[in-house]
Length: 293
Image (cartoon, rainbow, N blue to C red; front, side):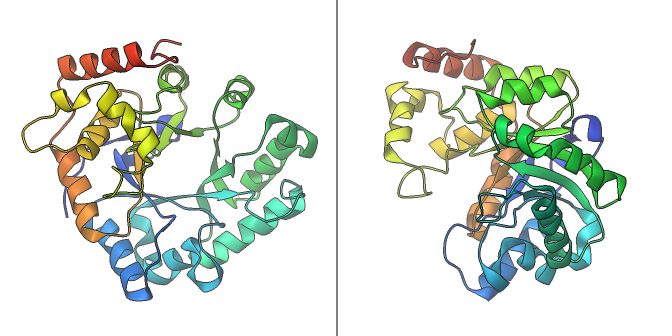
C-alpha cells in the first residue's frame, strides 16, 4: 500500500489522503470492473471516498457498489455521501432527507454516515425546509457524524456565515479558480475542504474534459511550465495539490491505470512555488475572474 500525503479534514480531525476518490463512475463499466476499481482505490492507500445516492442506478448505484465490494474494509477509509438526491421537488423535507440517510446506510452496510453533505441546495430551499435542523437531528440520533454541503458561489457566502457546516465541497481547478480565496477563508475558520473537478475532468480525448474549458490551458501558455514528461492533467492535479488549504481532491476514474497515474503524480509532490506563482499569474492575466477576488 502506497503511503500518500495526508492532512486533517478541518475541524472533523479525520485524517484524509490529499488525493481522494470520487465514486460517481460516469463511464459505463461492468461489475468486474466496478469491483476492480473500488478495491484498487482502497488497496492503493487512498482513504477518502466521496459518493451520493444519485450516482448510478438500482443495484449498481455507487453506494450499493461500496457496500457490495468494500464494506468489509470500511474502518480503513472514510465515506462522504450526500442527501437531497431524490428526483422530487420535495427532496429537502425532513422526511425525504431521513429516507435518503436510511437508504444510504443500508446500501453501504454501515451504522453511521461519517460525513453527510447536502447535494447542492439553494439557500432558500434550506431555509424553507429547515434543513439544518434536520441535519442536527440526524446527528443527535447518531445516524450522521459530521455535516457538510456541496455548493458554490453565490450561495457559498451565506452558508459560510451560518457557521454550521463542518465540511464544504467546492468545484476548483487551475481552469476554474473562482473559489480560490474562499477555500483559504473557509479553512482558516476550521472547515474541512473537499474539491471536485480538481483536474477539470482531464484533457479532452484522454479524460472527459471539455475542449472549450481546456483551451484556457493553451491560451495561458501553461505548457511552458510543464516538467519533463509531465502532461497537462498531471500539472492540473499538482496545481490543486499545491493550494495549501485544500484537504482532499476527489478525482474520479474507472480506469485502474489512470488511478495509478494519479497516485504517482501526487507522489511527485507539489509544484515549485515559482511555477505555482507563475501559473496563477498567467491565468490572472487571461481571466476576467482573477485569483484575488
